[in-house]
Length: 277
Image (tube, rainbow, N blue to C red):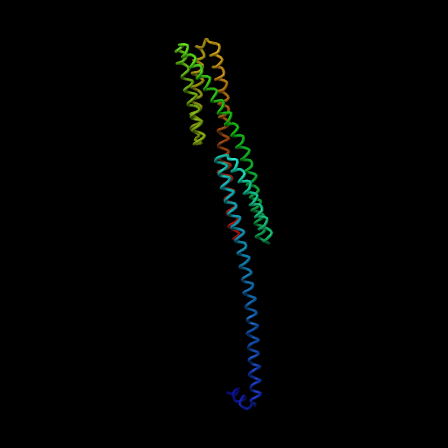
């Protein structure tokens, strides 16, 4: 009431100026508050922008890592040359993406990205070890196939020649090692498909049968040419056994590397990337 009484004693001009001054003060205060609020909005938007950029980086890295693992799996299953090229292309793209992400980030995020990039390099090194092992395994498979074919072919030639010469005893005796070697080769084919260790034991049984029956057949051979064929079969059968004894454990170790160790490393990279978000 005193305030309004005081105003009533002031001249009209003075009251107008006083009101105008108060209005200016209020406008200035509101302007200052608005500027302060805009600065806060700007900071928030900048923070959201940085988070968005970071999420985009992580999404790209995860997508590239997924492509790398998919291509590595395709190579592990098929040994395809194009799949191998795709793996190396994926690694190049992933390395470049980590370089970009590292340049765009600082502090703890950058340190984490560098550690994950090192994990990718470890993955790449182990993959190349797998490539070398697969090449060696495939070479052993070629030896295995050729030796088995020759061991079987020599016995089949003996049976054919003995039958043509009416030497039915030799032909009958030759059928046994021929069947044993064919069963051994069938067992190897099943092992390649199923990777069942029980098939290794079955292979050894068939080879034992082959050795026993081929010796019985050899004791009845009088033709030097047939005897030489039997010798060739035995030599190739031993090469076949050695090749399979190398091939089987190489296959087990190779699958462990690709499908357990490398896949585990790939999943670790995914989890490390997700932890950054």
